[in-house]
Image 1 (cartoon, helix red, strand yellow):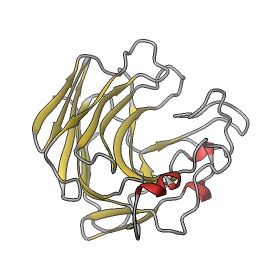
Image 2 (cartoon, one colour):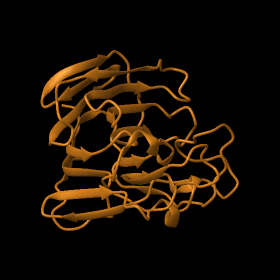
Image 3 (tube, helix red, strand yellow):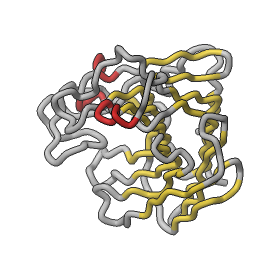
Image 4 (cartoon, helix red, strand yellow):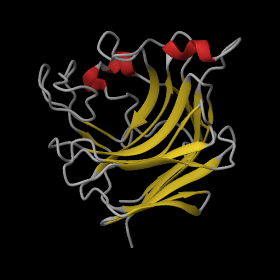
Amino acid sequence: MILDERFDHELDRSVWVPWYLPQWSSRAASEATYEVGGGELRLSIPADQPLWAEGVHETPLRVSGIQSANFSGPVGSTIGGQPFRPGQRVREEQGEFWGYTPLYGDLEIRLRGTITPRSMIAFWLAGLEDVPERSGEICVMEVFGTDPQAIGMGLHRFRDPRLTEQWSAVTLPIDVSAFHTYGVSWRPDSLVFTVDGEAVQRVGQAPDYPVQLQLAVFDFPDRAHLVDGAVPVPELIVSHVTGHPAA
């Protein structure tokens, strides 16, 4: 399947859902603030956006994100993707949704972000976790406002015993508030990460199961002391997301 998302009119609900891991919170409490049109997706976190998984997540967190798949077990079960603590229990059951779940290929995103030391932006490919071991994550990019030239990328093993953690931050002389293109070439046992078409990181291992795409902007209210004066609204602006099968 080829993905060529240009965000011309509205969010394509056959591909995306506008929630962030709603099984650990709820759809209502994890709903993204976003606009689509004119060739851009704009995810933002306005001042009145509620906390995500309030009272459950260890530190206060606000998120606006979309993802290309979603499912969970029944309420009270531990079946669901990307739990953030041991024994995590489903709070709201999610039906199966498989919008875009590639296995290998070339994936690319063009984006820019408005972030401060209390916020971050990210694009990652997460194992579907239909079984817990299929949980490896390909982090294409993540940038914290505390160090905006350090582009995090690589592989997180999580609960996949066959993988080894291999993630690092690559320092690049770029301005994340301007558009740049981030990508990964994903093949069996190989990941090549690119920024603006140039290979900047290589990993000699890879998940061998389908993933879902996730992109989000995050705000950390407990880091408010790191920002002086008025805080701009955190934003992630995306002009395209593409995915092509491996040749």
